[in-house]
Length: 119
Image 1 (spheres, rainbow, N blue to C red):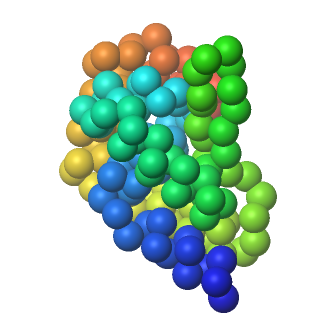
Image 2 (image 1 turned 180 degrees about the vertical axis):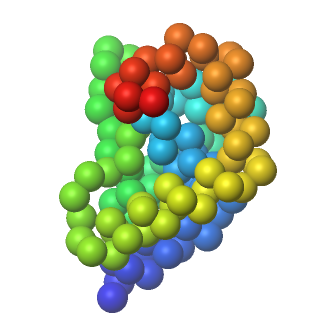
């Protein structure tokens, strides 16, 4: 029950929902999230730590850069929530704006993500 409560708390913040919306596109580094969301590194990192602690995102280090992606695995609740997020977050105007910003400022990244997902 505690894990479910932690997950729902993680979903109760606009910035974390925007981050999850962007990660639906694929792996992104903190610097890309900073540029797209217009928030400082400390804010982005704090929200990513919360999402990681709740089991919604995973990270990997590449040199000095941290990259984040949606977590795989987890239980049925985790899978159901990610399915719901994929469907509903992309319908939100602010998340769509974030996706447009990703494509505008990081066209090579957006193209790579698109190739990986076969869009």
